[in-house]
Length: 155
Picture 1 (cartoon, rainbow, N blue to C red):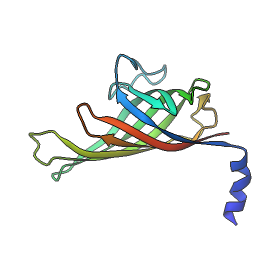
Picture 2: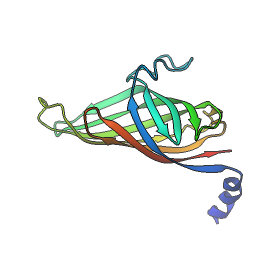
Picture 3: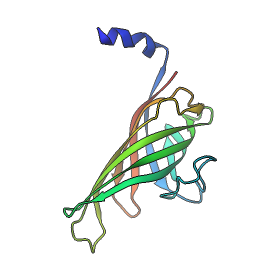
Picture 4: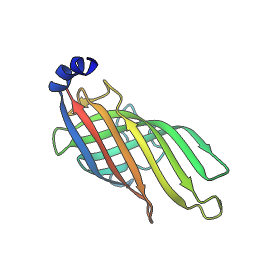
């Protein structure tokens, strides 16, 4: 019964599957947008594919374990477009988990992933009414890059 109640709302929203790749590049994504000046924990993340633009991060919590697990959470702002459409922004909260070689002298990440739910009501411009989630998987290499998948609904 609950699904029937949700269906009319879903019919009014355009739901899009997301996929693409991302990499850090401070030259291509130099500074976060106005109002997000402290979202500089990492260089700007260039996003290609369904989402085209820059993602900026503000780390809020971190935790290391003796077994090589690293946990992190925080907030982000994306500036760009969906499939080449109108420019806009949205914010996310995120949770990152990774496994590192327990030999701290190597500093080698073995695997990592993160989940980024879009903050409802945060969308502007082409992302007005955005909701959804973006999930990233770390592609281990030199440098580390990222593949992402997810979905976004625009109402």
